[in-house]
Length: 232
Image (cartoon, rainbow, N blue to C red; front, side, top):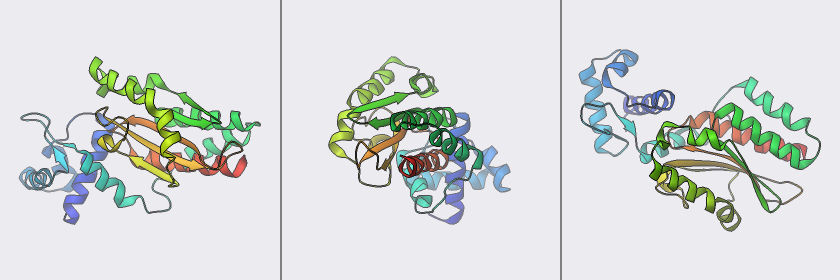
């Protein structure tokens, strides 16, 4: 992938996360100060390589799971992928003033829900705490009943999967069809492992549509895990 193609892919992903509609060549031509024809040529190459797709004729392009994976891999090795001090301070404050470990974990999840508008999850002992379900089903991706059923099946199996799989990375990102318990649900799971009084492998994370602001969510989930580990 050329440098310009990578920048175009990043722009498609970030714009699509904001507006939830396909991104067209005319918009990107203004962003990159080139002709729409040049953008269309680059889009064609990206589509042929499987990084983006055209959902219907005459529409713009949207990212594929492969495109999201390339995007996430391009920044996931950096220390800070997203810098939003106010949001990170909110997590630190809510966690540090919580008292009991259970309350600290719940406060961290609730804060992530408020900041990202996704579904928040965490393991507390042998139970899975969940918050923000209305956020998840309020996303435009989940307006039809079949898609809602797919997500519901994923949620039914989430707790046993976490216990069985016990992801070992400090931060794990499962994008769309990579998700081992909901390949057709159109969701991505971003989950951080941390040590707690309950277990050396406690988890906090977010579940949202595949279309989401990965840099922001990954950074905030990672920060929440670090804060919990340092305080409780």
